[in-house]
Picture (cartoon, one colour):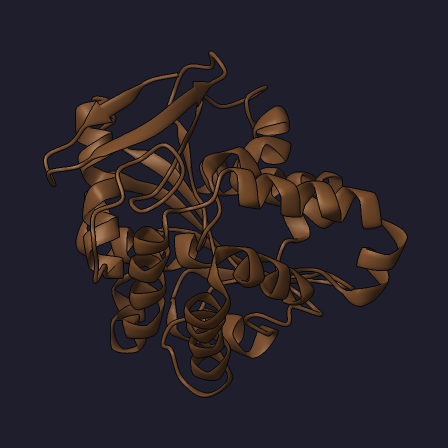
Length: 271
């Protein structure tokens, strides 16, 4: 699969999946996670939509310049990739840092977004989010990438899920390490997390917006998604019972059905 140079001065790795006509779905992943983490969603989405996944700056097969990075910078990367691929408009689906990037695209480039999905997101790095995201940075600096991924994984899934699905979770961990960011790229992405603040701009998001979060998300708990829902006018909030930060991996069937059903309804409403 290809890598392309974009107008922000870096190259990004990307993959197209599916052959459907119409407006594509663009998936944007979170901190330290490469585009392959979206494949459980792509398998269902590509039956109805052409789908685009890519590695953010600082990650996987994309360039990893030294930071600091910002959410605004990474949103500009995403739109520059759309420009390079001649995509005028898309459905945006982002998880965690990807949700922050997706929301920023909808604010700064509203003409490029048809619908928006924000999964496990947040509007402003404050309170618990500030402590958690700051802790990620300390894990990285004090223990390196291996400790970072091992410690972070304990927050990504519920304890019972890890115990019952230990081999699956270890496969996720191995893939994270294998496709990890260079440490400079990880630092840059963590910088973007810490400086994120669109709390005063949420009312500028005018497209149909789905906000989802796991009931047991220990990274960015449901209160942060409620802040998004309270601030975005045309939004719907869904809380997945028993769900984690990575509910799309924990229960891809439920996640995919729920989000695809919403997207179909949003398309009918906006057409």
